[in-house]
Image 1 (spheres, rainbow, N blue to C red):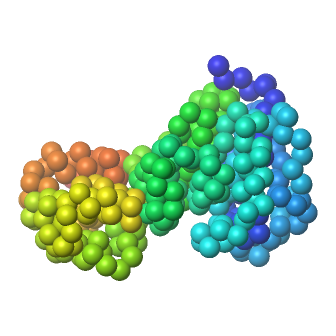
Image 2: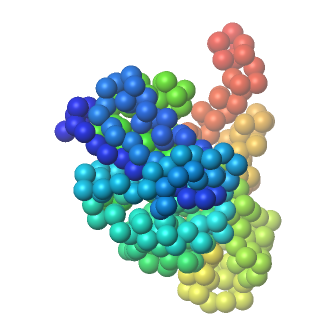
Length: 331
């Protein structure tokens, strides 16, 4: 049961080149819980060696060397702007692996998932990371079940979050678990963020930015973009890539972090969105033109990806561009 008075020790683990917002966003959420809601969190910013640690932005943070982990409740590992920064952090990965068994829950923010993976904490588990690096995480750690379209993933005592600001979503969920929903809602209001963001992180990316390395899979995606009205089965895309359907499906997921079917749905949604938001074209006609076949299918995929059906997306867009519409003065 949530109990705001229970003492919980939280470590934020940082390293040279860390992303400042990965630390600052969730740290602010926990500090608000302490300052305004009397939550008994004990927060430490920890690095392998202690002392000043300079982030990728040039801002240096004062850290402590790892204190006793005997009462460690939550281990939060931040990320970096690029994965190249992470691959040299062997001392940090060793630290995470050494103390993780002491923590009630382990978590990563953004690309911090690569450090959890290096410590062996994600083997056989579902996890997410920043959409740009989801495919890379899947390729480097094939035993992980990477879900590239989640704001955060919780499996047992391991939590992973998507890109940068998703660390705030993860922190709010942890605070809700610890202190109750009313406090987490209040903190979301203080931060001026959604309490629970709808939709997945794909609403903030495009398929090209999740692009695989040059080669057959990228060629198949390029073909799909120009043939969205067709059925686009795995067999058809495999023919374009000139490999077997089974090999295509496996290689596609390894390189992009998405299944072919999910990727095609996203391409169709991305093609549909400007027409949904920027035109008065009938929605069923848009659905047909981008390859969904019918409006019901497009509605279900829009809800999954954008968190709202096409009608709501159109109303929101019109309200943003026409204040009179938002107030109900025009239809």
